[in-house]
Length: 442
Image 1: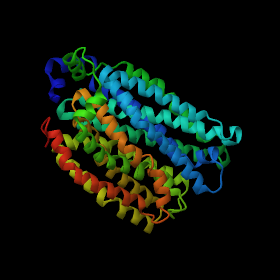
Image 2: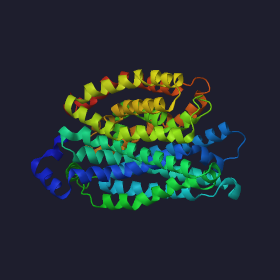
Image 3: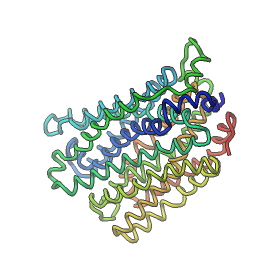
Image 4: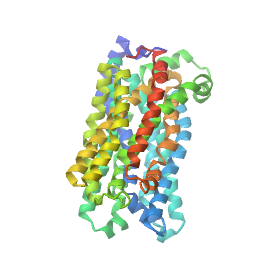
């Protein structure tokens, strides 16, 4: 089905009067920001979570256990992608956006208020795992629902730029987590952070939930979804069955492209605060300094993601996607090597900003491109499922893998991203042909 359905003048006129694009972007990005805020808060405060939920044989083992629980949440994401993605393709994009943010709140509450291991023993890491499973299940449907909504609401000539706000909201969320990290590590002694202050970001996350729900409740359904439902009528619809039967190659190719998306974000952005302060990395920065660098990088990332999307709208997906992939292949290893050669605070901030810009170039473009691979009747399911299949192995386990790998080489994160970039570069021609088979792609 053509993407131009949502651009029909009468429909767009009514949609814009009742549901301006600014409100659409804010609503779609709000829940995505909450998802990233919870995920980044877990990763940024991993050392303190480890001290509360795992017996401390040594710091390294506790950190790996903490990140393995982080990874467990990603195992639930494909199930969330199937259930919530199918829900979005049958009941509407808006309904999914409301459901995902509510489920995310449950997981955040469990993590934020779970008693520590010295209070309830083995029940503590079990509760932590349950909280991550709720978060993972919710996140499994969030990206497909939010991306599908924005792609279908946006005019074709602004599609990538507006969808870039999804990853821009990631920068907002990470910056909020980093800012809280700066405030908490500067305001409380280490003993109080370990005891209770690490929970503050999760309480803040819960306070965001009612705002996100209220904003999303005001939305209209997309014209393209309503038209698709009118054409299908009362016929029984099974998006996951239709996806696996009719679009298996699209699913595989989209998942291969999503690997770089996952690896670059989790290795260079989410894991960064742990990496910079890790003794194994040999940089010698404090947690507070690492949080300051993360804050600076993510503030830049907010605008870099949106700008990357606008460049794709102007110069075409083909050209900008190629540039962004080559940047992620070429930049991270030399940037990290420079930081290790000059491990000083100004260099840390400069390098992290460069890495965040490099990630933004790809992350700002790929959401809209991924959604455009799939037709409307399986778009939410296809986008969610392909993204989250890649997430199991190449996002969830990245922090634990990097914690282990930097023991062999401090440049492990950059090397890992470069390898993922080569996979994306090899997959890109087929990926673009699949989009071009349904619409024009520059």
